[in-house]
Length: 516
Ligand code: URA
Image (cartoon, rainbow, N blue to C red):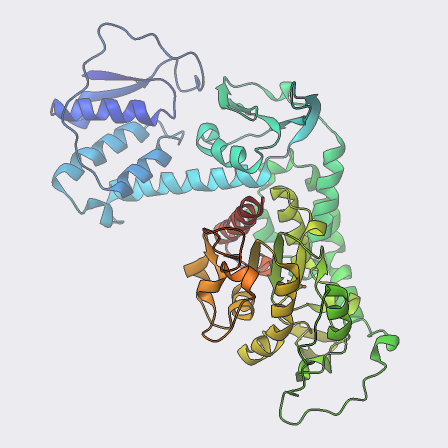
C-alpha cells in the first residue's frame, strides 16, 4: 500500500502529484491511500516538512481530458471521504477508456459529477450569502488613501474556502476582508490572498450598520407578486438564515405578501399626471410612424436635445405613454449606458432605471464602484411600450422598427456625450447603437470598437470613430455588451441568474477599466 500525503483536504496539486506517481508504478486504487496530513479538519494548518522517505515523483505524464481536470478540481473540495480514491480510479480508467468522461451514466463519472455539482452549489451559496461587517478603517502610509476592513462569518458544507476566495478577491478588491469559517479562513489585504486555520463563530463580529443596508436592500427588492415560498427556501435554505441580517425580515414579508400583492394590482397603473397629458392633440398617425424628426439642427447640449425629445411624436409609442423618458447624467461622461426602454415606474416618474431593473443596476454599480451620476444613462427607445391588461400595463418588447426609428436620438446623445465606452444593456440597446442585429453572446465579455459593428451607411461622428480620435492607435468608442438587468430578474434558474449577474458585473467592470 502506498500512502500519499496531502497537505490539506482540498489539496488538488498534492493529489495530482501523488496520483501521477501511483500511476507510474502501475498501482491499482486498492493499493493507494491518500491521506490528509493532520486529518480532514486540518484545512490550513502548517504544511508538513518534507521527509526523506517521500517517494519520488513519476516522470511520465498521463494524459487526461481537460473535462476531468476541471471536474477533479471541484471534487477534491468535497467532504466525502472517498473523493481522492474515486478520482484516482477515474484517472486509471481514463488511460484505457478514452471516452469515459462522455458517459454520464457510468457509476464513477456519475458520482464524481454529483460531488462536483454539490461543490458548485456550495460555492454559489457562499458567493450569495457572505455578508461582510465593517470592523475598521486604515489610512495607507504614503498614499493617504483609506482602506476599510470587513469580516464575514460563513458556514460552508464543503472545503470551498480556497476554491471560492478568488471570486471575493476580484469582487471586493478595494477593501480588506477576512472570511472566517469553520473550514478555514481567507484574507485579502489588497495585495495577497492568504489562508489560516478554522475558527469558531465566537471570533466573528456581530451587528453593525451594514446590517441595516442589507435589510433595506432586501425589503426593496422583495416582490410580493413573485413570492413562491418553496422556491425561495430552496434558493435561500434556512440553514443560512442565521447569518443573514435580512433573513429576520422574511417571515413578516411572507405574511404580508398577499396583502401587498393585492395593493399592487389595485394601484397599477398609477394614473398619468394630467399636467403631462396636455399638449397631446397631435394627429394620430395612420401609417405607424410620423416621419417628422427634428431637422439636424445644431444641438450643442444634452439639455436642449432632451427638451426637443420631450415632444417627440416620431412614432406611435408616445401616445399611450405618460411621458418621454430622457437620458440623464453627466454631459461628457466617459461611460454611457443604454437600456432597452422605460418600464412602468420610469414612465410614471419620467426617469430611467428607477424600477426593479434600476435597483439591480444600482446594486451592480455599487459593487463595481461606478457612480451613476458620473455616467450618461439612457434607453434605446424613449417611451414605454405596453399592453393594457385589466388594470395593469404589461411590458412589450419594442420592434426593430421602433428601435431603429428612435436611434435618431441615441446617435445624437452619443455625439454629444462622446463617451470612451458605451455599455449596451441587452440586445435592443446593441441594435439601437449599431443599427444592426447582433447576437449578444457574440459580443459579451469583450470590448469591440463601435465603428466596426455599425450598419453600413450609418456614420459615427469622427471623434468617436477612431479616425479623428486621440492618437494613431485610438479605435474610437468601445462597445461593451452585457445582459439587461431585468434579464437577471427573469431567469428562473438560480445558477443561470448568478451567471447573468456575474456577466453584468464583468461588463461594468470592463467598461470602468476602459474608461479610466
Ligand atoms: N429597463 C430599461 O431598459 N430601461 C429603464 O429605464 C428601465 C427598465
